[in-house]
Image 1 (cartoon, helix red, strand yellow):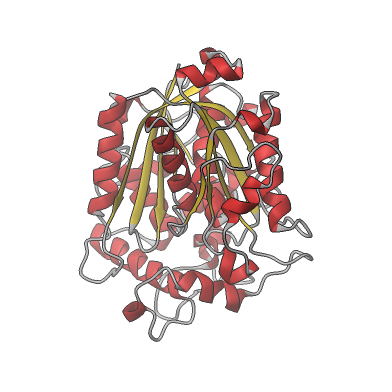
Image 2 (tube, helix red, strand yellow):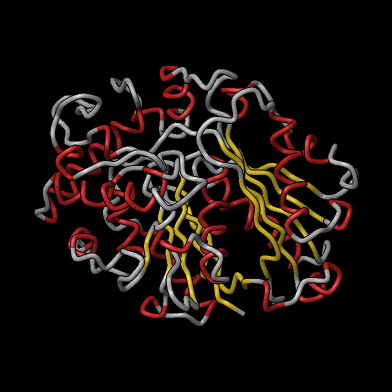
Amino acid sequence: MKRIYIAAYHQSKFGKLLGMTVPEIVKNAIEGACREISVEPSVLDVGTVGTACNIALNEQGLVSGLAAMVPGLATKPIESVENACASGGQAILSTILKLQAGWGDVGFALGYEKMRDAEGKMDGKLIGKALGYYSHPDERVGKTYVFPHLFAEVMQSYMAQHKVTEADLATIAVEEYNNAHGNPYAQMQKVTVTLDDATKIEGINRYIVDGLPLKTYDCSQITDGYAAMILATEEGLKKLGVKKADCVEIAGYAQATDGLLKEGRDVLRPAGAYRAMNRAYEMAGVKPGEVQVAEVHDCFTVMGAIGTEVIGKAAYGKATQFWKEGKARVDGECGINLSGGLIAKGHPIGATGVAMVGWCFWQLLGKAPATLQVKDARAAATFNIGGPICASVCTVLKRT
């Protein structure tokens, strides 16, 4: 197996891309990543674009063809992938596999989503419908907003199984909003949320589904954004003129898929997620205790908790205690979702998995914002999911 390195990372600010078109998003992302290390796109041998809602929301398919329109990329092996909210993570894996197959030495992985219109407004009904396609048809019946409803059920199960409260889970959101203050790329950078805000039913904070515990502040954001990185083998780094010391190795990576139907599965202990994470750790030769930075897929606070358990930082059912004790903070045992997570940084579906790995890249190189930088971080882990804890993409990164 060839060693794979992240040579460069670039992203937009998450939130609203306004009048930027899909072709412009793809072009800006690729060229932006190339500018980070002063190379031309023509040096890229292969590439992958990850996006989930592009056809439903933007009426545009075959986005790999848009990437091929970037000067220097015509005729290159480029594909587009969709794996729901794990599309970005899947894009990274797809490019890694092309490099492992010998199709080239340098590649790009790009993820994006355009979920708002040119004025920054969103059509909640349309977005809810588009996201609902990533659930099993049998579990859409009777649900107005499919995914908030499904995860409200997961939240209810987690609370009952582990005897935790709404406030316990809300602690995760409060910590992440606080982290977002220091991240200039975060959608909710200027928003402050207290535990009282996150638990009291007033103003914008309301129960999403009658009879279920999920509230507004438990939810991630509707977000525009893009993120792109350049991946390379050791030979590729020589071609790029980039030193290993300026890179981060993706030392472990894995993907696993559980059945799409949530009913009948143990979603509090998702088999595919644990299998992928454990395989990534094994491949990297890293143990969970060695990881000092992590980004987990907190589309809802309950997933922030489950994700903390999947990466091995908290025992089953003990994640909220980990967060409440401050162990997920920048000066804690492991800085988890210091970017603000999906809840406060934002959740542009296709970009999410790329941005999670990109944030860890910055952390391991000491390039994160000063107030959020984990001291002397050597290893990081990411856990990116798609659907009702169905598709799982996991990575382990090491400083070279």
